[in-house]
Length: 402
Image (cartoon, rainbow, N blue to C red):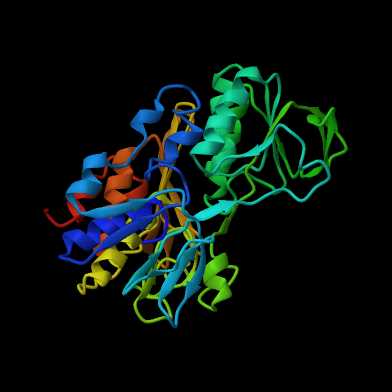
């Protein structure tokens, strides 16, 4: 198993749970065991979660499950003929079955000044450590990109009392992930908390003094003073070694519903994969914890000879200030959206339909709607739009008794 990610860890656990009795090795490029990543942009930055609380499993798990954990090992070569992988200059390691779960890395800026000190990304624990230290001393923070990472860091920095500006080149926040109503709500939320949001504004360059960033020039012609720039402009799948042997494209590693690749005995899971999905018109790469765990579970079961299809129900969540944003399904392609709850009170959901059938639910501070939405989508059932928009109608009555 290559990759100390949610998908990699779930794959080794699933393989053991499914009865695989052979030797299992989990290889990670980082110097520590797999850990929780969602807190890195939120509770960890705010000092509410200690580093020793981040590991996903206790050390005893690896010992008791007879899993060899190899840290600090970045796979650089895959030989599909000899069926070996190699870390740097180390000796090739043979495998009978291989799961690639290398995740993705932060996309870097391609503007003048991107190399200046004070320009950072957030993807792993090392990034989070550096960012938390820099936040303490920062006097003005610039966030480039209005996606999940950018907005979560913006909320954390503002909560620490830092002046924050968010530059989003697109017309709205989280444009690829949520509908306009959610984007608009998040703009109002951040602005109420003192965050400056600049939509339709890209970054032209960064200026420095003494090698450190001191200001940014936006595409709107404005200058933005900053001594800390956090770049959140997407991620690139870690597929270099897989691409070198023809297993992947720059978009990711193509897998089927059972997480099988085009090579016999080679599987893949998590943010580095592209998989067909019932909620999308074409295969897609889903960057979310739930998908990584679902795919890891399927890959591990397949390794054990007990293949199970990945359920493939997209689920996302984000905490920003006092707002918990949750999504299940994919709203893209919907032809009707109805609201339940009150956006003015900061507690509402949007139920999205295509040809009268439920496709997705986006919620702000309404976790109950998410639970119901997941059950509807998993069962292939749907309320009517009128039932979904009626707060007096109990949607649970439409679901089978569990």
